[in-house]
Image (cartoon, rainbow, N blue to C red; front, top):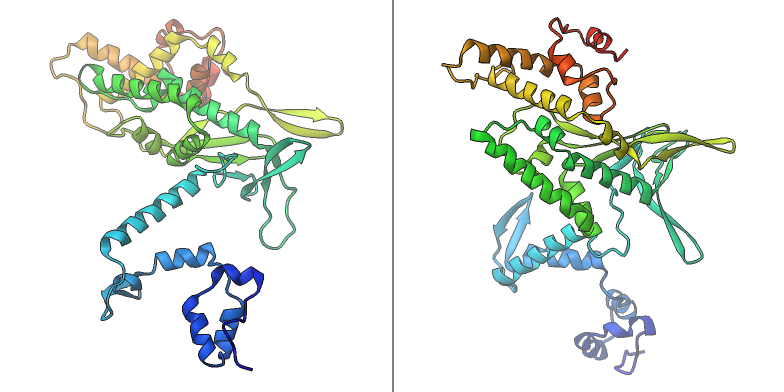
Length: 373
């Protein structure tokens, strides 16, 4: 039986009718390939379309082993149109990564894992008209696997953003992280100005912009059964704040996310605390200022492995004062953290610290002497 122009494709394929193919089909019996093509003409999928749009054959180029060579065939797409399409594809990739068009952005997708190293993927559950979002551990490979962890997306996302805001809004901690020593302190002023601007903008950012910020800062979150750890890149944060030269080999900056183990019936669950700002009211500004000055003195005296920056005509008393300050740049990390968080012993003050003449270098002895034991 000869194929005729009256033969109609199935309803699911009717939208993809190719007139030229139909005319050719009336002239002779279609081959097996042509028949399969005629009867199953389906819309092009996004993957196939993406492949077509990225195929350099259309611009007269042949790619072999990763290298592009000018082909002998004529181009049917000019370079201007090709470049415009590639720019659009690249822009779409960025939008998908930032979830710019998503109805509900999963801020931490791709940046959160559990304590077993398993990625935690976004998921949701609905009850009536209410939608609840979570991050769930994903088991990959053969078992047995540890018990999966599930955490409310809203809670962990809020905790991470608030922790980042606290860090960026903490002028003393930023000055300690990025000690700038430009003439008359102008670099420090620029650092704090950039931080204040970012701190003000974060709450009003669109969720996709917040996600883009967290990606730029190389955020990594690890959810353990009893705690949550989060960190961002030291260099990435410095670059975002306009720091041109880093004076430290530090790689990451820890974000503080306070948690509490709460018993609910027979289960003990991890709960995020959002009232951690209360500790900042107990912070001693003079102690914090002393720590900042200690690190500046350490840099000026060249005790950080770099050439000294103090003036050669500086008198004895000024040099001695710098040396006394620099001692506190070698305090135990736990002591410095407690001072910045305001959780140091009530008996510790800047006056007492300055009057401590025989401060040991051993961290355990330091904590015992200053009342941290």
